[in-house]
Length: 538
Ligand code: N01
Image 1 (tube, protein in one colour):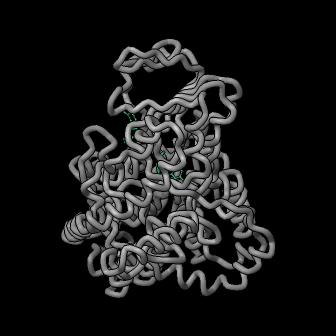
Image 2 (tube, helix red, strand yellow):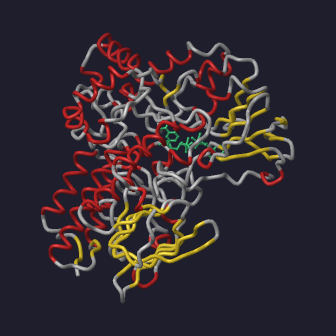
């Protein structure tokens, strides 16, 4: 890293896909740009989520930034790369794009206050206990949708004398060999930890509230020949990715579930399921996530496949209940490798928290309501995040009149395009609320939003504007559009972090833009093509 300047055109906060791309893109336009990243390396969620078995659920070559210069000298080793490979990929990106000279690592932005007089952001940054100031005309928050861990307020948790860690801030020194382990939570993180540690531990107890309706990952190694094929076809692949709902290489099947015969329907389900990955979820008939009867056919298919993998009927009923716990695919579907088979081992137990909740932690373990004591050495909290908004509201961000983003959003999120907030001039957010975020691949969302910001800052420079933020009307209209489109499918019927349901007291609303990347990009393009008519420029 070079020495810090007094003031930057742009400060980027956070070094996942969003921040990495924004730093490169804005610096390339000649804006003096600097990144502050809390971790010791780039990677964002992949830097912090170093729990056993962490790997991405989006397949390669989709899960990467689309600059061919980056892919030219890079080889993916697996269809779904592991966490360490992803961190190495980010180091490769930093090298090819020569980013590190403009990044301060191990530095956490604590405060960002808009200074109206100077028309700039005043930042306070903590570097291992030493705090310093920085200033910027614009600030781009790329803090990710899963950067504020959620630990439920379990009674007695502070009394537990063993080791305990949240998956989102993993302590790599934890050793599972021959230990008694409890995993609480069966979301994407829980599933991966469970299947990874089950073979090492003396005893594993999984505390499940809602079963994960997980799909086989279909993991496989990728050799150089396969990587070379991807590289040869990369331009067409990128064009395809830019045209689909979530940035994948495929989309929903345009047919409706009951338009075809049962035989055809089951043949498609079989084909999608056997492909591995989320094809069965996001490549299925166009109405499966919209029509309950259609959805039931998908659940039945998944249920039969899953039940056949679990020997003990009691465990099988907990993992794959006869009655669907919620419409299939309306909570995040995880990819698994041997998750269900893990429960066939005698030393792996499964507690259904809906029937028998955790009553208290004790010094030596966990006690459930029926009085059973589970002695454990290690507790893995796979209990998720104050998702999408928490990464921002945990920072002291204040706009005009000193009002904080936390207060501004206390009764619901307001943004325009999921990028900017009225009253917070020259502040941009990538991969935050009311944007495609968890409904798109990370790189596709990061690149689309980064492009919008690049166009906005170029426009301001060209026209001589010092500040920009959206009109109140634009914000209200966007909020309405985001929440209206979220009602179109079955998602809103299910309680999940997509709607803020996992955090007690959080307003229930659509935290993501669920109408798909193509429409999102059209909305962004319309805004810049209109000369930012829906914004206040000064
Ligand atoms: O978190 P989650 P996550 N008592 O919120 C349970 C991305 N990601 O870290 O479903 C008991 O999904 C909760 O139960 P319920 C991905 O987008 C990606 O797993 O609320 N249990 C649930 O089972 C993902 O969706 C990857 O009933 C409690 C679990 O804890 C997102 O990050 C890998 C509880 C939390 O699951 C978050 O995933 C990892 C309580 N009080 C993460 N509170 C890959 O790409 C919560 N739970 C592979």
